[in-house]
Length: 223
Length: 321
Image (cartoon, rainbow over all chains, first blue to last red):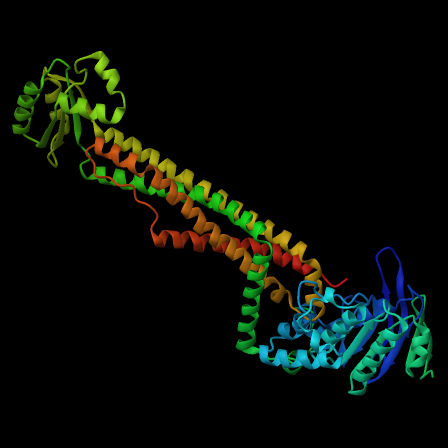
């Protein structure tokens, strides 16, 4: 599903965020990307979402070589990925419903179909009753769940999350992770960057550890 | 197209949605709704931009209206372009003037002669100059009688002028044609000046609309990032800004026309009185609805162009952080 071959990313000024990184993630797999801050976790995810372009090497997602996706086609590519940030990035002046509906409206779905899918997504994350609220009226955990609902409303093939539990306490973090597990069980490929090792250990998934821009270890199904 | 495009099949493109006309229509409806929401959220900023555009557009629109009226006026004068005014000596009384008029109208090459008696001249002057008290103070009537002569078509003007100049009663003789020629020359110059001014102000409208849109894009940067993250194309994000630019121009044009109409209403009565002074039934022509529509269309286009120019550039540069 996602294959990195000798991928490097360096920024102007000479900082190498990733150095010759290679790994493969299968379709329907749940993988943690871990490592210290600055190890290159975020960069790796941003390359998958085409927020940034690699400096060298090859990234193939869903059979597509990302280097060959032209700028004009990036939006269409992103519609098949769900991306979740630590700071959820909700639009503060729109209701929960409108936030979750955004990717669907952009994709041109009918209002009827949009409504159906938004409510299904909100139901999954347990926030159906809050669809009319503004993000600021919700707790941090609820806001993150709205972000997840927005990322899954358009039924993406791949779900990418960058420190999705970074602002949450242990219990809320577990809830969020269980939610990702749920989506993974219906076939979505999930890639989560986190430095929360305790949390990581309690879920039995493969983890790729980065250190200074390189793959340090790949651990299979830590329990 | 040196690099082969990535293969994105229609199925992949529409993996989560409908394409086609319905989606296109919904996208535009969403853009219009977004435009109106933005306007409702920042009414003052929008009103200010529209006011600036209205003032900017009122100037060329007003100048065009004035010019159109002057052209109409001089065109009307063309019909009897050789009318001449013969000012008689102050010592010539009204009866002598009438006798001279009768003799002139009988001579060859003269189509029509009208006498403005000294009394009539004084009455008009009193009515419109606002100097009636000064005239009363002078006492008596300082104004001469005037013969207004329309030569017949094809008449020998030189001969008529020579003959009239030899009449002892005649003081000076004026071809109104000279005035018309001067006015027409000035009109031609005015036309050119108005076109230049209109061109400069069109650029101003472009810049004003473009700059307002640039500020709006910058203010909504975070929102645009989120849109890009969930797969919005630049065109989708740009659309509400283009509608806003168009709306700025069109509304600015409409209000600018309103300003011009108000100014015209203010001078309509004085113009009519001035025209009566010249025995003319000239009425100031205002803005017609087609003209207003034309201003709105042109200004709307300029607003759209200005918005496109900046929005395209600035939205392209924003991406997810």
